[in-house]
Image (cartoon, rainbow, N blue to C red; front, side):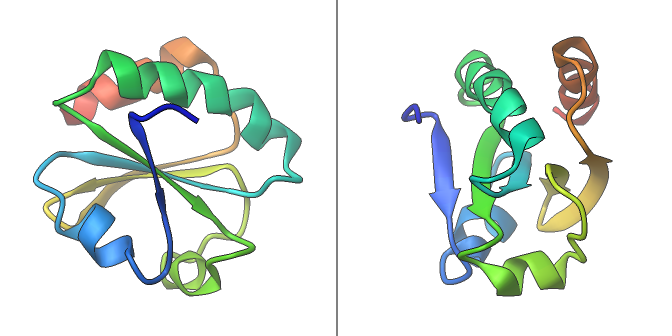
Length: 108
């Protein structure tokens, strides 16, 4: 994982996401999830391309059940966009890179 992507936990979620001064894209994922693995490199690229304008955070749902439950994560990958501590958009499932970039552009 690159230095542009933050691994968050239940303990650090508030600081990593809710108190972020940047729009934040949170990827709820699991290591056994094939579609999660397929969008991982795309998220890495977005994190690098949008550095300083967007924060990309990954939350492993197996290790962090509280955050997953709080945001009603039922299917993964589950991407939530946060602005000022509030969810402003959600994408469930792996989508093509161009669609993900369009969604990101809408929120920054």
